[in-house]
Length: 168
Image 1 (spheres, rainbow, N blue to C red):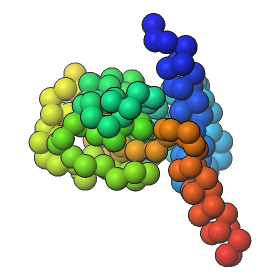
Image 2 (spheres, rainbow, N blue to C red; image 1 turned 120 degrees about the vertical axis):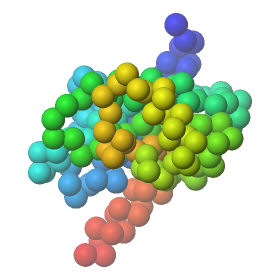
Image 3 (cartoon, rainbow, N blue to C red; image 1 turned 135 degrees about the horizontal axis):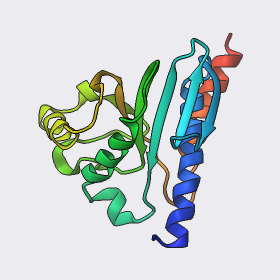
């Protein structure tokens, strides 16, 4: 079992990730929930669903230098259990180098599976061969969540969304 601080960070990150997903899909979301069988589940107005697995670390070495392919593979395994009218399966994390040095991720961006370099795609396909995954629905989101002000990325997205709403 992890340390209490790491566990608390994980739950806090899960809440931050749910808010982040909500903000990104504000106009489409009907409802969103945590721990409803998945870390995060959103039901859209058109009855499609978004499922997300949130993975985080509060260790500087893990954030900046470690390869987290196995952790992301675990999130894909869990996401593979979802069936039905799925819009997107999201692996959301705060790792700066989720696939080690194989790809540079930009903070607070999302990447479709097809956006990944072919060597990363091939590795993930090999690791998830036993899972039933639709790679067209998979995306990877990097949410900055670290340091003293862990919520700065959420603050920025909230400002952008509010500016968009007030601009109407």
